[in-house]
Length: 91
Image (tube, rainbow, N blue to C red; front, side, top):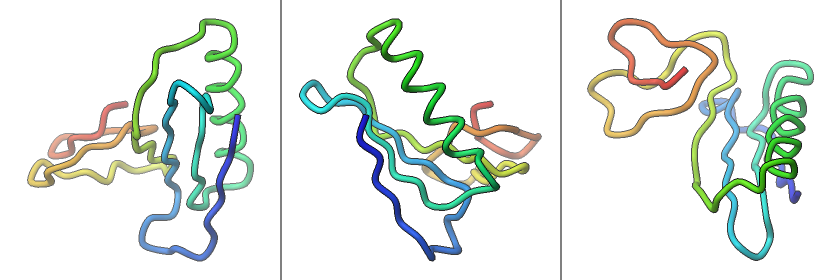
């Protein structure tokens, strides 16, 4: 697994961007998060991918904060730790 890190980007903190291509495998960009939440999510994704050899995918956005972020009016959606009425996040 390759992990890219970007620090100091406040508007999109608590976000992971994940993708898997055929040649380099699972990759992720951590845009900052709570304590060890990103490292834990990346470790679980890597373990699942190694055990089940998942398909090529992405990029996908994973919001790791405690509130949803993608409202109904947005043209994008994220995978998230939560959702609520009026939001498009996929829990």
